[in-house]
Image 1 (cartoon, rainbow over the protein chains, first blue to last red):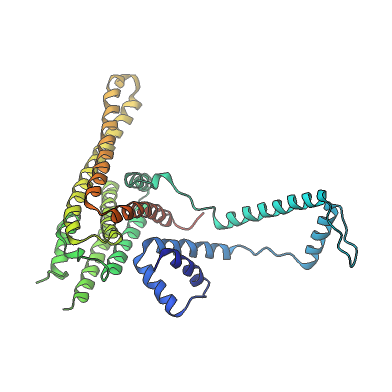
Image 2: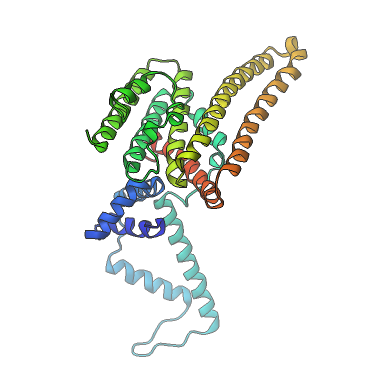
Length: 197
Length: 162
């Protein structure tokens, strides 16, 4: 499944509108795609946080007052049964008011959503990413531990998701194991891995 | 024992090993945990890169040792750079008394930084020769996703938005 389609379905899934084969296909894709898993996590977080916001509510009376004050501002009052044509000056003012409402709406949307996604320049290269992580965790052991747990969980997820997809058995690959410092990992591998006696 | 059971046991062993490592890491100096995290990120990168690029067994046999060597070299250079930066800061704090030692100390930091960047460039050049055109294109996208994924992971580790 392509990530583009998966991301459409993730939105439906979070809204409780995805079931059956699509839900299964999405679950399969999520198991193998870290980027979409991260996207789903972010979307779920946005959903939770936006639901925690109080919904904007205006009573019918308040809407009526708002409409009347808008009409006063625009300088026209519709007569019953006949809708007056808008003169160009009024149309221009109405357009400005509309643009203002859209601007305010967009601002509120981004405030609730937490802002547009940012592309942090520190995370555009491998060493840049590691440097940024290093700076943040250096004096914060709790953050370091939490981050390490997330990395380890991703390793576990990737191995589990890749068991049927990987073209090679990574866990039996000495070149891969060599990346692990220490004999403990080899012991575990030898005692329970594919090369176990 | 079936392949899946063996793989499952291996994964369980790996997770237990990593888990113990994490608990033990809390008692280690901060530098040791940082190095462990760096190693874990390297491992995650190898795993996800293998999947994303559909690397063959021959390719992993050629690529993994080089990536492992370069990663070790860079980790060593990073340690030296951290020490060099500490020395430079100390010299700055001491002011006039150590002023004559400043240029050499600054040059050392700059040289180490260049060496680290050269290792990254070496890896990129090496991969260009090992990957197919499609894999090279996938590698570019994989790298961006992976780096951004690290950023997202760090944000998640920080906890809910404040």
